[in-house]
Length: 414
Image (cartoon, rainbow, N blue to C red):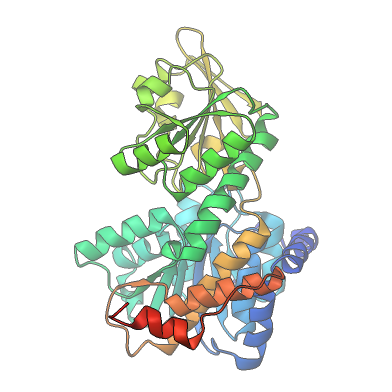
């Protein structure tokens, strides 16, 4: 039995999903194929995702393939209640609502896993973590799963290194079509969609401090520069730091950047990126946001504890007055700003990422008897198929190697 805010909200949710459908031709094509072939017939699939219209459409694509689908949120502030209601109307079991407590959030994850699911589609690693800690008895039913995020893959690699991961997981985040497009263009645009709609402030001429220069950080830097921002990168990886310098950005430690930053965006997947020592030197009016999966990158707990006054300045903007009179502003409680204060990545971007999710889940089922490793790179043929289909929908054509060219590339004598 689903547990949501209210089924009466479904009308606007259906409208949102229909808009996504119109702008996700890859997923729509897969849905049509799956309706005929039923690759997931009789399979129970558990999803922990940001429950908004694009992830809802992924749920419906999997259901069209014959799956029993059980979904919950992957962030307490990213579930859209009308979309959750629309999914329930379509026969998906949903356990999620906006602004749930931490206790409710984990109870919903347990509720999904109680259904003995065989495929896990995770966003951040909470389903996998719960299975390996509190609900080990459910692992016997699991064939494998897919992980969507950088943060989730960090957790999976740590588990695998300690020989704790008990079933195979496809690292969707490491597919070329994921990190090149979703992480770079999707994060870059959606982060500033969330910041702009929440603050209604200009980016041009401001110092934009971006913590982390991975694929997501590159996307944020690209967008900030395009809007006229003066971009400052903080990094712990010297190779990425050099790359940022050669891309034309300032690079410095966070405590130095904290003195001059106007906007701060953390996108590292690590904890304690902006802390007490950084708050102490920030400008009055500095705006802090996070684009990493978990709310651990900006130490919001310290701000709550030490502020002499707190005030909600606008929806999704909390102000924290410091003892010396400065105000520091945090967007969306330090949670994922692009989803907690926006609609997430553009539909056309998630069309590719969720096509990889669906095809990777299908790959797990088809190869379950041959898979021996626990961490699986997205098969090259899946990545290539998604890219080729997307090019076709964009009306673009590319060259094809001739037999002579293939022979040349495969020859040891060049």
